[in-house]
Image 1 (tube, helix red, strand yellow):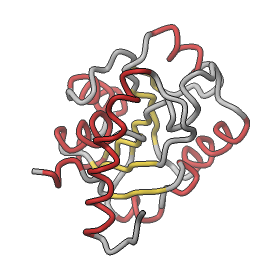
Image 2 (cartoon, rainbow, N blue to C red; image 1 turned 30 degrees about the vertical axis):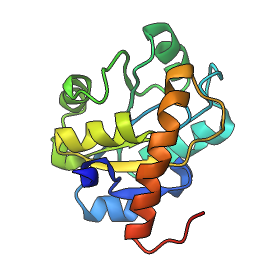
Image 3 (cartoon, helix red, strand yellow; image 1 turned 120 degrees about the vertical axis):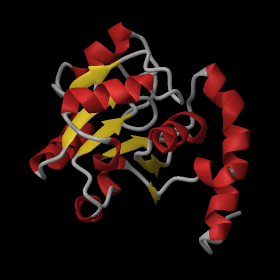
Image 4 (cartoon, rainbow, N blue to C red; image 1 turned 120 degrees about the horizontal axis):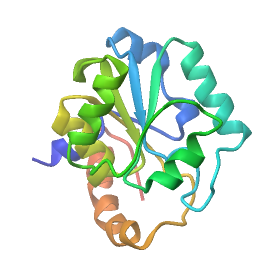
Length: 170
């Protein structure tokens, strides 16, 4: 059961996503969470680093979308400079929003990776839909209240994940 909460791939940041490995796995599209994955939750627009990183991913031939549980205003503003497909109030870990995003990008679950910083929303959503899940370390320690409540449980899950993979964590 806990394996459903383990990411398929763990990286420090979106810049470290192994694009070559994703291509080998047949991944054609990436559905990105915004808050604490691409930028802190309280930053309205992507910075230069985020824009450059996302452009690099698109230049490699991947379709991308923003898949957020946040409100329309937040997602539209954040996406203005990116120009990706964008979905708000997606209901993660439910799969309805992700399935809508996959249809828009013309990809199946087997061709899609969900990228995010949270076990109980992003990773679980990806697995429930049959997609690959890529978990990033949170960009910063600031979180919305509901996320702060989930982080201690998430830490336990991730400690188990790293131990299973032989990574020494404290």
